[in-house]
Amino acid sequence: MTPPVGSPEAVAELAAEHLAALIRIPTVTPDGPGPLSDAKDATMRAHRAALEAFYPHVFGAAEVDELPRRGMLLRIQGIAADRPVVLMAHQDVVPVPEDWEAEGWEHPPFDGVIADGWVHGRGALDDKGALVVMLEAVEALLAEGWQPREDLYLLMGADEEAYGDCAMEAAALLKRRGVVPYMVLDEGGAVASEAFPGVGRPMAVVGVSEKGIVTLRLTAESLGGHASTPPEESAAGALAWAIQRLESHPFPGSLHDVQVEMFTTVAPHAAGILGRVLGAAGALRWLLARVLPRVSPEMAATVRTTTAVTRLQGSPADNVLATRASAVVNMRVAVDWTVADAVRRIRNLLGPDITVTVVEQSAPSPVSPTGDDPRWRAIGEAVAASYPDAVTVPYIMLAASDARHMAHLSEAVYRFAPLHMNRAQREAIHGPNEKVQVTSLGQGVQFYRALLTGTLFDA
Image 1 (spheres, one colour):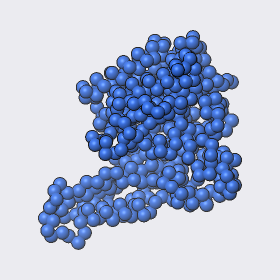
Image 2 (cartoon, helix red, strand yellow):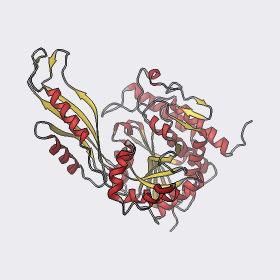
Image 3 (cartoon, one colour):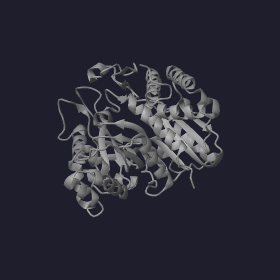
Image 4 (tube, one colour):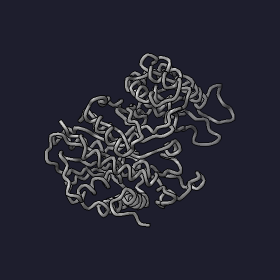
């Protein structure tokens, strides 16, 4: 039976169809800086054409600025321009390996299959699902004759997964025009179930800051030569020692004020002693900072700076000793650390025989307001309208988003995709079997409708 036009079921099904179609356009993030290849440019143009076909009222009402690599910044003029809002989502997705079948995908990653109430494929959660529900909401409102109370900007990046400059260019453009966003909302947290042990209700975790991101290269050097006469310590061996030392000496944990607020907000919904402990998070900072890293890697990352070795390079041949061995380390810097202090700690830990080079860096983001701030309240009200059982809590985002480039323009930059994600779905982001529930897409549309027509611009 076909659901009535405009019903929640029809809204969700239309969003699912549009998302599936966009997944079938494999907008894999470009490699490195510079212009797109002809093939990738054609893919991005096809994606743009699909967006324009699906959302004619959005593109018909908007002034469109072109950004690098086919990114777009749309401005929909409001009744006023005193408190503009920027909504963000990115078009690009991470690649999948050629042997994706060996990863255990339920459906081909770029087929955009809708089955058993789910939309399957790369980008379903990161970040085309959020892109679709944002555009579906604005499209429907404009079709109803709605005009935003303030200027509305829609930023659709094209190289977020490559830490590209698309969003940076958009931020620079807004700054040149004197636009000071009243609020910015990008991807980040989600409506998460199975996020806190002992908590049955879903948590709408909204990023109010994000960790800094630093790429380091560790380098060890030694004499080269033939592998038949190895030295007492090779470059590869020295590098292995450095990696082992790095992993066995993690950064100390600490609880930021945001995390204390997160735990105390969750506490009333946690069972037994856990609820009492979380409720006393402010007094038990030292204890939680030591215990949480033992709970899970996710909890460990919540309370400390992390380091992850991601790439290794050594000898060019099987029987040749490496004169230089190197490792790439991805470091996520906690909000209460600076990049300089974090790098200094690693250099002191590894000593003078290991060269530590900073390849690229981005500082932790400032913390956006919560509590009684009207922008925070507006997000909570929109969550309540779309996910009535969810509890809205602040958190510090562990990954990096394009939103960090907006932090110097606005004091209120939030990171939240209004999609439900259980633990398995969260683990599937950048992995196999990325998928989103059709019903959650409908709820995501409702979130944006409630946000844009609610109390956001009230004095």
